[in-house]
Amino acid sequence: MHFEHRMELFACRASKDFAAKVVDELNGLMTEGEPKIHLGSSEVAEFSDGEFEPTFTESVRGATVFIIQSTFSPCENLMELLLTIDAAKRASAYKVIAVMPYFGWARQDRKDRPRVSIGAKLVANMLRAAGADRIMTCDLHADQIQGFFDIPVDHVYGSKVFMPLLEEMQKKYKNMAIAAPDMGGAKRANKYAQALDCPVIICHKTREKANVVSNITAIGDVRDKNIFIIDDMIDTAGTLCKAADVLIDMGAASVRACATHAVLSGPAYERIAASKLSEVFVTDTIPLTKDPSKDTSKIKVLSMTGTFAYIINRVYNYKPISTEFNVK
Image 1 (cartoon, helix red, strand yellow):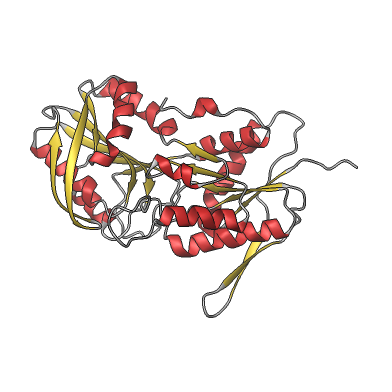
Image 2 (cartoon, one colour):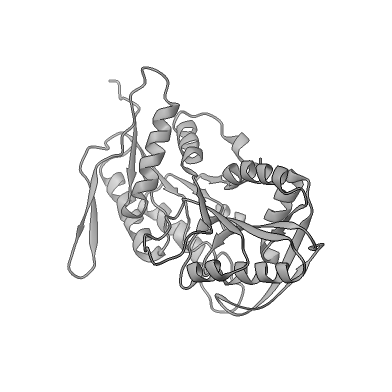
């Protein structure tokens, strides 16, 4: 008896727009005669107490199922992803691959003080327990989170969209430098600086508590430089905006930022609008706010959907993806 090998792609509610664009990109990769991919049909029943129940409204039996969901505002979106994975496994999917453009809880990657949880490890365990056979994600806060999983993890880099931008900017701004917003981002910034053959600047910060930065100093030659701060995410934008202000005060010609995940919680939009940042480039792993009162004029969005479509296509067809795992 012959079973058809087929791909089914679904989206949870937080990433519907992202998933629709991935489907378009996937169909652009198809050769003539190959069946077109569609975004699978699913729905979520909600109960009055806040509980919800995801349901597939089409068969996934025997299929390789890709479920796309970023876990920003992490609690509800993570729970919806877990329930959807469970539903796919119980509906006899052949494999279930969780595509998480933004992996929430990634900042809790180690026990850095007594009596704290390691949230990233717990989430890894829950995804596996729900039935995920593979994870795809982008720019984890810490690379070692891949080791929390006992299943394959495809770790996509935001550099796929940022490097072409930075190469164009380097032609426009000759005196360019790459900056890390803190010591934890030094490795990432150094990779970009090496690829672009430009100097690197390290910002050192001290925190009063989570999301509150008390002081920032910069290490490196700042004067007259057009600086690009490289980071994996912007949350409240406190670190980023304070770093930009410090760099301008130290004589930088301009400061821009590239950050993969636009979490942008709390006063982030207001801080960016009022800061000395010229532009902030982010990706669409997390959608920007639709609130018209928020000033997004400095924020430019680059799409990661083409990169994810390419990786999904290669993984589904058992083709190598090793060339994707470098900065360039």
